[in-house]
Image (tube, rainbow, N blue to C red):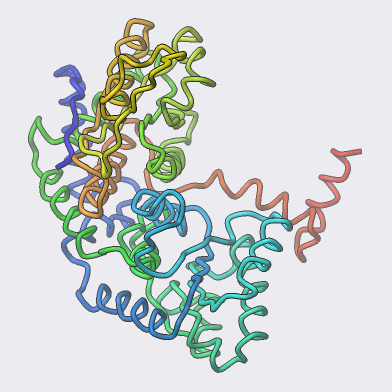
Length: 433
């Protein structure tokens, strides 16, 4: 069970209740993108069964690597879940190895990906609502050519699954033309809220993890966060972070003490950055992994500008056990740790750091998770999604649009010579002279 220990003032709890009512009443800005609120309990069994069937089929076919192509919300949720659930060094794999493409335009990255998959049995999951987003569309061209060249078009079609719009768009049209199986991205679910749709469920299932348990965890948190109650964890988190923001704390750092949660931080950054950063407002989301980053960012956090607050994800039970061994020479002076569990040392580092940062003027709140598994990850995903909707409405912005991301695309298209961007290209060239 996931718990939070934030203690906002009564004033901000009341403000959070008002935003909660807007969200639950489905009457706020962007209310046509609230389908994620129902996903945990309303996802049809046919979708879950379909994802698991693809995973079983590909395993029986001998697929060794599945390339998941997507960017932003089309890959970060699955990446976060797989990084959390998998062995840190690729051992003890439950299902098919999953690698990711299409989230950058690096020539080296994609060339090295082709090197990696060239001698392996490969399948592809391509995720894009439109099929025209530059980064995944370019990657899909490259990977599709590789797969078709290796297996022929007919066999390639059995190894390519598209997660896309139900009725329109370039990827949907291509899927119909080539005979790819498809899963639907619901119209009322934006990309950064899509981890509990086939966008996240299919890659997680292919990797061999229990998506039913993931959905059960999310459904558990869905029920808790639907309560109009001052103990509602999503409401408490949203209230506390807005109170800190209004007091001058403009940067929130999501902290974990387990490297398995590093990509969960990346998913969280997109969720909050894209949902809240608009109209000149918003808390800037950053993430760190301690104790590692205490040796790089710790000095600034302890004594830099006092604009920060921290949200710590604290894991109660480690998945493995390892104790510190005794050293007869004791040259490092650490025999006082002999026989202690490494996770005990990690927990004391967490407690000591929290106290030091609070003493240094950096407020801390904690989100406690029992262990890292599918059920608890489902709870975490939904908790932060629900809190994000409440928090953004408290800030007075639309949580579900992202108009600012179009600016770089227009400049990139102009510089690349896309038809229709000639005037903008000339204006850019003038600026660069």
